View: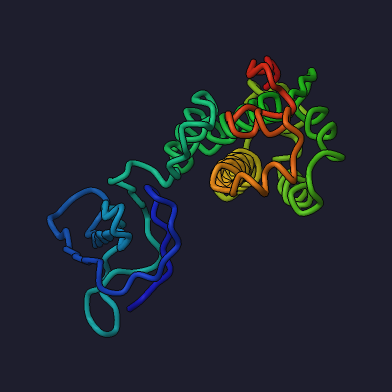
Length: 259
C-alpha cells in the first residue's frame, strides 16, 4: 500500500510504492513477558542520487483473538535501526555543535524524553546565539528578543510549542536543568528545531547561492556584450572594472571583514 515518506538522508518527500520490503515473525518461546510479534520495514529511497535504505522494527503483544493468534494493540517498542534515529541529515553549513545536539536528542527521544528535551533546548539556544547573535541569561529572554526579527509564521510555531505542557517551564529554567516532559512533547521540540534549521540556515544558504548565480550570470553577459554597446552604456572607468571582473563598489578587490 503506497504511503508518504521523507528520506532521512536526502530529506526528499515522496510516496513509496514498490521500493519497500516488509517482514514479520512471531516469538512464541516460553518467557517471562509472553509471546511477541515482530514486524520490520525496509525502504529504499527512490531518489536516484540517494538510494540509501532505512530499517525499522516494531514489537507487539501476541495474543489469541477471535480469528486466531495475532498481534494486538499499538507497538510496545519501536527501533530505528538504520539510520539509528529519525534525525534528518543537515548540511555542513549548519554548525556542528547544533547538529550534534539535535542528533542526540533524536536518538534518545523515546529512551529518555527529559534528556532529549534538554538537548533540544540547548540546540535552540545555540541556534539563536549563532544565527541572530543574541545572548541573554535565560532562553525565554532570547526567544522574546527575536520576536521582532522572525516572520510571523515562524514566531507562531515557536510560541505554539513553548505553550505545550511542561515545555513552557523548560524555557523558563536554565538550559541544563532537566524538566519532566513526555515523548510527544520531546518530539514537538525536535520538530521545532527541524523547522528553524530549514527556515534560518537552509533558506539563507539557498538565497546566497541564488545571488551568487545571478552575479555570475551578469558578469558573463557583460563580457559577451558588444564593445560598441559597452562604450555607449558605461564610462571608461566603469567599463575597465566590469571587463576585468572587479566589483564596481569595491574596485580594490579587497574583501570586507564583515560576515
